[in-house]
Image (cartoon, rainbow, N blue to C red; front, side, top):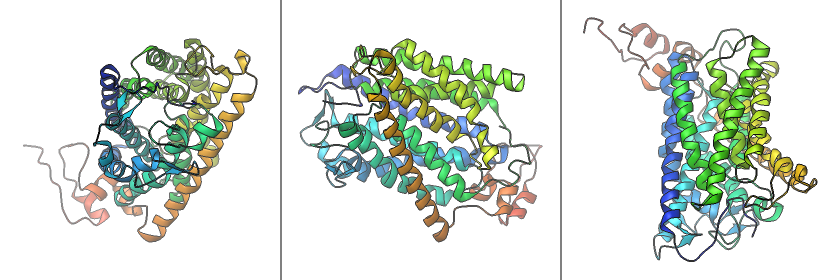
Length: 448
């Protein structure tokens, strides 16, 4: 049985595997608040609350949408390998009766774990349109993108024949590409979708002319730490068993970001004359992204090589937005899409037949066979995500609008969208409210 999730199919539920998967699900859920800190620190001070809320609202909208229909689309019986039956597991109710199993874990535990994947995938998308998309449009998009983009892609990549339903998706079962935890379905999909959103919305006011530096690097570093911590559950939990496969994935999830962080800082030092804390954080995330698809298919040495490549390439890729004039606000394309491509295609070179995948890459005598499969998976997912996200963005733009007014953007999206400020600086913000037409005044008395 071909399997992107390294799994063992047995009839009896294993309590150790179940405990590990539930723990991993909690770690993955923690990643979304971690992302909120990471993204929140990277924007300017008058947009930090809005940026963090875009992650937090995704927990609510995607969590419910996943239970209602998302899990069914991702893991129901396949319709021509493209999407699952949307009614098969509606509201997750069929998973309660009889306690069905997915491998050695309860189906509900598997659904919860995958639901946390869906939440972080949608939240990641917000990094491309920071400081300018209306909160109402983002909330609507989070549901639409989950149902129409992410869930079908999860079906393509994660729905193994016989795992949760009779038939699954085309990438894992027909193409036989390897993707442990979402290098394509999450990282490439988010990057391509974010690129489409950035193009439709247009750049922020003052892009390429005004400085738009991160306002709080301590938040960024805290978010990086939480993301890295949660990523151990993200990747190792995808083994679905608490055994040797999970151990290898855990070690690779440690080593790849270590190598990527150093590679990014080296490039930064050579290019700009100094290493930065933002570079260290971004490099670590790039390494985590790259090992996401490949963590169960490569050796620790392979993980270090993939990390080095991801750190160096992504460090250069983040500057491309200025060359092409596309305001990918928080480097979603440069880090997540490019890093996802490096990790996914890297399997074709570095896959070690000693791992549970039993696949040999080019450097292990496997020729080009796995390499072309990985490349096709990247192209298929990236093209679908870009096209569908662009279409959704155009529809929203022509119906409810997608962008805040120039006045609101100039005064600060936090005040315009939430009537709040991220920091109590002890002064009256009445003038900012007047500038965006908000009737309510927030007054902070410095003497109180």
